[in-house]
Amino acid sequence: SQQGEEDPQALSIQEGENATMNCSYKTSINNLQWYRQNSGRGLVHLILIRSNEREKHSGRLRVTLDTSKKSSSLLITASRAADTASYFCATAAQYNFNKFYFGSGTKLNVKP
Amino acid sequence: SAVISQKPSRDICQRGTSLTIQCQVDSQVTMMFWYRQQPGQSLTLIATANQGSEATYESGFVIDKFPISRPNLTFSTLTVSNMSPEDSSIYLCSVGAIDSPSLQFFGPGTRLTVL
Image (cartoon, rainbow over all chains, first blue to last red; front, side):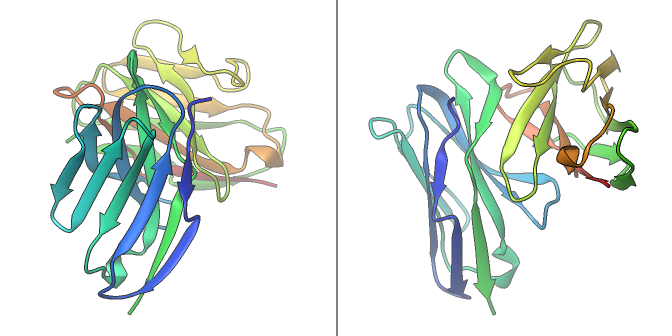
């Protein structure tokens, strides 16, 4: 299975602090994406990083990708209570990029 | 990005019955997918809904249990058949972005509880 693991499984921080989540996967990928899910609802796409990229920024989000270690991290800076959600990484297989494999997810709680 | 709606948003069903979930997109898309998210778990791909042909199922999922229809490029249905409590999950449809095939947008999900 290509499904990876995320850690930590749960993270609780104070508003204003940074939150870092990690994702590991198992096989070669075309790209890696991060999604947010609020309270068991639909997923919101956050950011996509391609296999030939090492770092990407979007607003308060910073994503890194290390293909040699098959891992990625998502950093949320200056967190807000509204960032409270579950965060999932998803990898698209190298030769079948329509097929997504989701990590186990990190549940982030940002306390006001 | 595509706007995706799902019906129903939630349902409580009796075991042994079937439920059909609808997924509607506001634009024509090539790729549509169905996922299952069991309580507290991550998402697992059930199948790719192919327009005009049978769906392509992932390992562990079969057509008899999860029949899928895709009559056109904006609509698909997933039926959960002969339900048991183990089928209690959130079911989500997603579509591939037109300009970026490896990007998917997700519907709001259908929360199913089977008693």
